[in-house]
Length: 226
Image 1 (tube, rainbow, N blue to C red):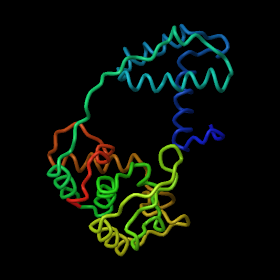
Image 2 (image 1 turned 90 degrees about the vertical axis):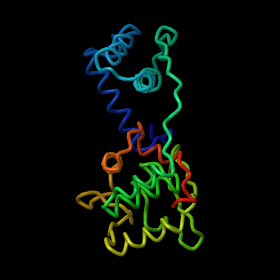
Image 3 (image 1 turned 120 degrees about the horizontal axis):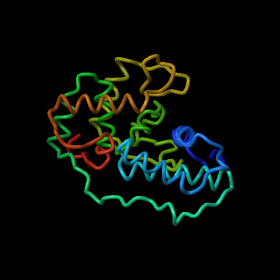
């Protein structure tokens, strides 16, 4: 996984998922076959009540475990991916985004949610954002090793820059790697879980009833609002 350039979060996720599968089958991997995978998928779908999309993610890890890690080929036709329903995601309106941000009292939370909807940053990218990544001269943000390990630049709005300056002036986060948003103990950057928790808290306070997540903010182009 390291040689393939997988991110740290992906490597951790693959490890956890593979461990869950091995615990479930409770026998040596070389003694298993397609029926064991099918049994596990049925367990995930019928007992754990996971969605088809999530079950497919588990299956992708299982195939990696067999075919890449153990160099063992099984009959994929006997274990098909589950059909995923094609539904359009719920979209946040301008009024929703304004209400969401207005519902936040914590300036730290307000800043990183503004970054999500005005700069289109993922939660993992916000978590790893560094002070040196904010380019106020050219009004852009450098995103280091985003999805797929790719670097890119994204736009920085004037409102976001002003809010970042207010936040930095009040907190002045100090970290050897220059992370902008620190975790509870300030030993590392904030976690994705903490960002999601802040979003869900703001969602509840704003009264918005839509089925959305922090990633929904990436679909909202709010430059004219923020």
